[in-house]
Image (cartoon, rainbow, N blue to C red):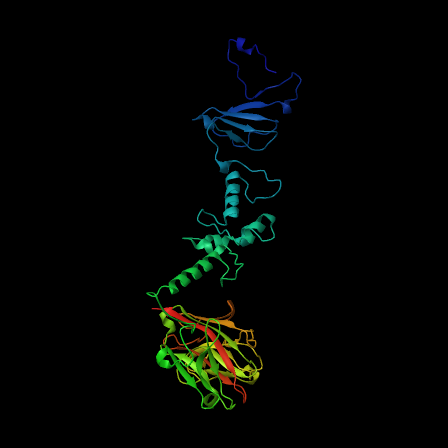
Length: 421
């Protein structure tokens, strides 16, 4: 160890390299050495001591004054007084997590990995690369359907589409808060005469024997003696009865029909038709309930073997039941200019003798999307094909013909029609 009395020397002490020992007998190679020279160390000074300090005799600043080797190292490291740049700090990476060898480069790698890019504008957060459904902490979010993609679309109240709504009473066709609010809004609109052309008839204001002049209906019957014009019958709440002929020869002889005197068009918007009907004998009556392009005695379509639908009307949309079909169920039928919609098919719901069913049609403004609902449940939706012509006059109608040589009846409790003005 250097003497504490060295300051008592009255003359300068000079040497080429000075070893600083901690004990008089310390080995030369383990003693730290101080050397000096002009300019930065070149690496040729010889690294034969454990620790070496190099002092420049021509340093221009404190940051270029001193250099150090440590523990027998083979390179000099400047001892700087200022802040050291992150790129100048080497990185020890025993776990091999980085390709970088300094702190700055490692931070850049971390940024790119976390944000999916090399700058702050590239941040592809998605459910696939951030969260997965099988992660425990995501399960509750998934149950609420609040996934990343859904959250990104929430704006201006759109979040109500993400909120499920219970409907114990079965009042709504949709299952979200947004959908049910839209249904309520549309219902309120339909109660406003200034906004909607509306027809509702529950036949309470009519007596047996009423005529076309007494109502908004055109009454048709076939030529067979058993066929009758639709007429009001004594029933609670009022109803109208269609009575088919008994000839068993088709619509001309056996038909019974009533049709609205005033048409509607789908392109007016929010077209809806509804009727509550029951068939006395489903084995003996073919029935069409809906909208057609004519008020003359006509059943717009029939169904035969193989459930093949045959058109009579050019344009129509409605519920069709025909005992001649292989499948004894209500079918959804639509046609535009004699071209059937490709989705015409069974609703999978059958009528039952003497049981009322509520049949509801909703038609989009372009005529292409049509929903068929029975007793409040949508059973069939036509979309993406021809549908029904949006700018053709369509008349509300119910028509029946007997399927054999026996007269049959169909009752209608009420009929409702609405479309935007």
